[in-house]
Length: 161
Image (cartoon, rainbow, N blue to C red; front, side):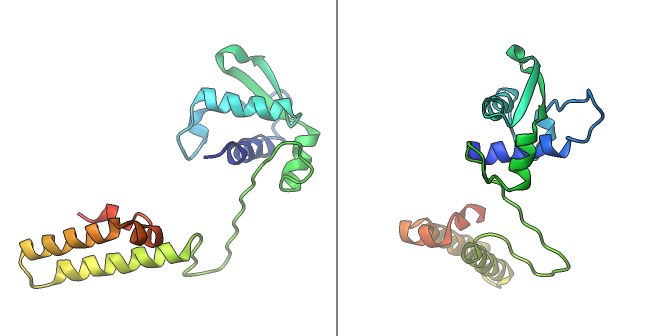
């Protein structure tokens, strides 16, 4: 993940805690995130945000035991989706309401992956011998590894057993 994406996520965490009772600053832990991130990486990104006045860091930051509060400038940056910041911050917001069959992302790759899974299911359900099924799957996997095919289909072949 790029720094500008991490900055947005961490600044948003500070923003979400801005109304905590006075004295309850934000102390971010790796467990606060839905993806793997270390204490040093959290500290590094918080330092970048503090350097540009978006948060104020406090405490003993030498051992990554520091906490922070979002500044008024940081609040303005979040509420304007990064506009006016002296630091590149990439906020990614997706909102979907009352929808079914919604797809977010690269539709072409998802369509190809769905088609490959349909082929694999058809192979598994066929009356062919297990050896023939495995041979067909191995040929399909090799086909999907071809550079031209991989540039179109992505990493679809990695899920073929």
